[in-house]
Image (cartoon, rainbow, N blue to C red; front, side, top):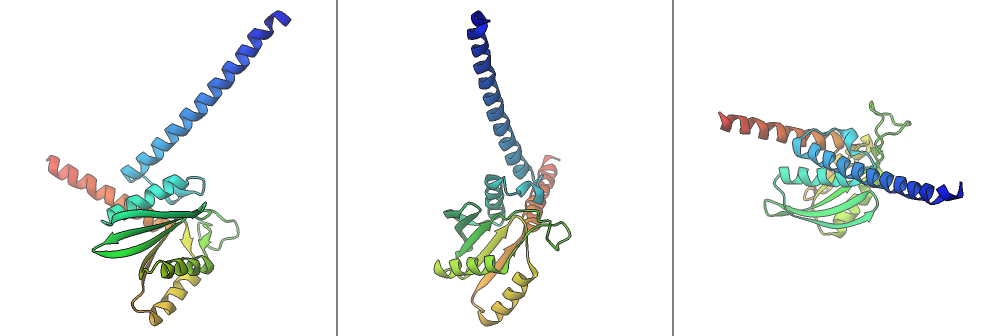
Length: 193
């Protein structure tokens, strides 16, 4: 038994190395698949789950590029699920915050059980926008917004006419990417003929 001990140790470390290599290769392949989903417009709200933060940010950047934003600069990732961005559209500067929320919530009242962005999240975003001297704001999330958010923005816009803001939920984000890719494919087919 003792004479087989070096062989057993060698096999153990070889297997450990192979498992580690396979894990890294699988993670790399999953990353490539997710990037391909964004590029090809094959994306759903479920693809933007909390454990895919880099994919969510890639989808947000793709969304901004589709809308022809330029000078897209990531300001910071102040939390593990929030990224602040400044970008320009038609010479207007925008403050954009990408907020990744837990996608599912068993206590949710929405049809798909998505955990909505709360009014407190929205107020925090508006505070950051004011702090950054921006009056053009976009809040993008991978989930949905609560009814209170929409009600608050309606009331807020009555008092602040110079303040423009847009809420983009996960459905709108993925729909825009899909539509853009569909239109691009149609144009490519037209030009081929």
